[in-house]
Length: 201
Image (cartoon, rainbow, N blue to C red):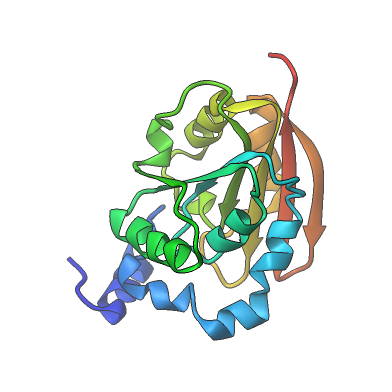
């Protein structure tokens, strides 16, 4: 069991297949330098939230994007879902320090389905997480169940994430599960990819 951030990163590097980013090394995901370089607010603006949506962020880690999403939900609600309860605790602290208390926190494995009713969410946001899910197709299928017809499924992928998924791979995952490709923006360093749940099966 990794005990320090060095141990955790080495463990992640040695593991074969999908595995989560270790919570012990969360500082590397959420620090002032990364925030200045990555501009999470600009990424979140790409979702196009109006402020009334219910949004699910899958794999929020320590809350790098979560506060920015919450800021845009004037009358909506944010729910976070993560495999690691420790990451959810870190995200909770970030959100509460920013003044956001009406947020849902659920721990679980995304490949095993999401414990929410059908047609609950207007948008789902996954930043550098789908590559860590052991059964990606099952995850996307479950997102299709809990998103409302017309709801958005949004992926942000970036270098140097070793689990980065390409736009073509994301389309291969989402389109067979009743998602329509909307657009993809970015460059060799990052991709921002949007899908919309079709109105009917």
